[in-house]
Length: 427
Ligand SMILES: *Cc1c(COP(=O)(O)O)cnc(C)c1O
Image 1 (cartoon, rainbow, N blue to C red):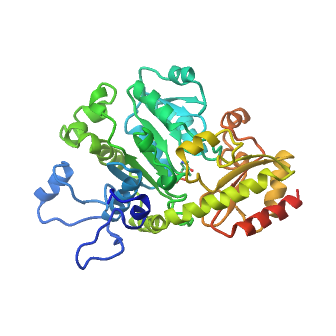
Image 2 (cartoon, protein in one colour):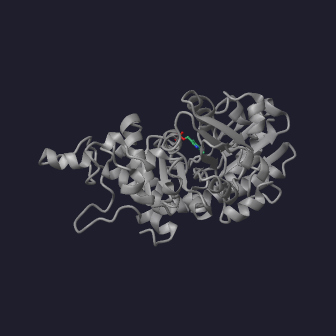
Image 3 (tube, helix red, strand yellow):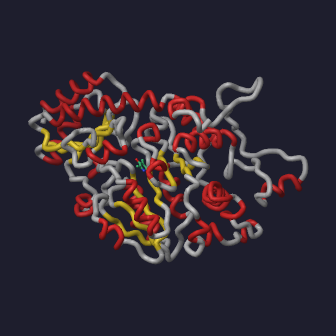
């Protein structure tokens, strides 16, 4: 299936029914699975045989959908998690533990920033944040001997900066560590970070992949390209025996293409249990079936709204990498030639008060802590998703207090522009 183009994988990837089997992926709504002998089951527990025994670790419905996302990203293995937060935490914690260090772009989702800067710091994992457009010297200077990975977002939520994936991958690889890229906003329809050197790709599937505001979820995909054994001293969890699985060494037993996801499932999912429900995986698959069609429309609406806002006298500036004047336009041309996403950020003249008057006057666009939905929605990050960040941190992340993040849905673009135009009258 991975030989097909992304549009075909969106529709049919991950699940190929046999003769007389359901056409749509079955929802295996079962916590557990039956075996004839305890020896059969023992083999599963020892990772000697593959199969299902408890849905906290693996479920067939989830695996179909994870396989589709892995195929879309061009990876070798994938897994679903209960949320995007769980996906990013698992992806990092799978290779970084107490006493380790991470290099991350400072321009990332507020929840992920908090995860690293506060919660993972409490666990003894330190993060150095670098600007996405930092110099070569600044980037290299951020690494330490105990650095275990580099993290960034293809298109940052909500700053909408575009990550120079090749540059960050090169720096990561020169220091013997993988690059983890959160590809939530462009989705693999518009960018496949593995093609540009990313080693691990994560998603909040809650956003465009679901696309209908139905189910919170996440995904992790391994490219299979990072040679763990070549840097065995840095990654003992993958390259030395795991006592909790009778001395299995993941990188040896499951190879370069399977080690990361197997360890992440066998250890982190077993111990933390942030599994996605099979029902939600089914909803996610419904979203994936039309992802390629929807992304084109989200981008068309985003571009039209961005161009309208850019020409409006009450708008201070518009942030959208599809606008030729945007500082990230050249990177977007390289990494996102078919469009970026439907999210447009803009600053109104008049700051926080103007933003709030504008948002109150919208009729189609609803105020929501959400993006990437079929229905247009908007948010003032400083008073919601990013309210735990100081003004200084907000500025460093490229999110001034008066910024409005508008997620263009799938409505008629002229109706969206009319709604925005009316609301701007009220400012
Ligand atoms: C929303 C989001 C997350 C967090 O995902 P949840 O599914 O809400 O846990 C992580 N990264 C990015 C880029 C996001 O937009």
